Length: 238
Image 1 (cartoon, rainbow, N blue to C red):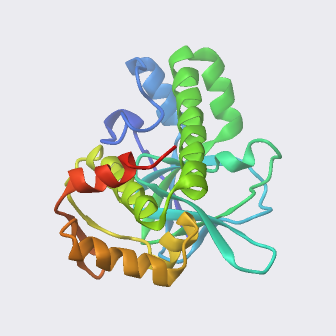
Image 2 (image 1 turned 135 degrees about the horizontal axis):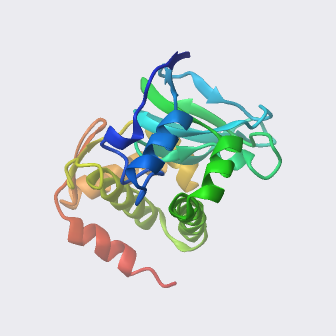
């Protein structure tokens, strides 16, 4: 990992509407720019932080893709989330001042470092910044509830359909295609996140292709029938 101390300039970042500085004035953005003064490059497979590391900063993903995971009692890694450009990493460390998961880059990535103590001080001055930060935390809670719903009441097909639709929706918000994507995570990592075995994930992808819902070429996915995927989820009795 390599940290570079140069101006990030939140005011000119094309992700600013997805990240923290929403609704701030020019003078407020200048103060935020002074706070977010460092970027860090994280190579594919490297850790941004690990379980037990002291919590000092939040990290806004500028480019790339990450996964967060924890180790289960039997030594296996349990994937707890996937984060892409415009999303925050590190919220797990706020409550106990230490990180409770590992954050690993799934591809060469870059993050903006946001010192948390300074962010708190700035939030007290800027109501809009505080409001946006609360919205981000709420979004994480809602996402966690969604995962619990996936794991608690949905069949394998419904889980994978919901996962793919959520992923494309998030990518579309960043200007990417609403129907074509390249999976940055392996099928094993998807299975870990969705509570499914690798064989089940692979079999479900094949079934979706046979049913004309997807076109699958290894990690290249094209959604052919979005309505069909949504119908799978809508049929869930919950």
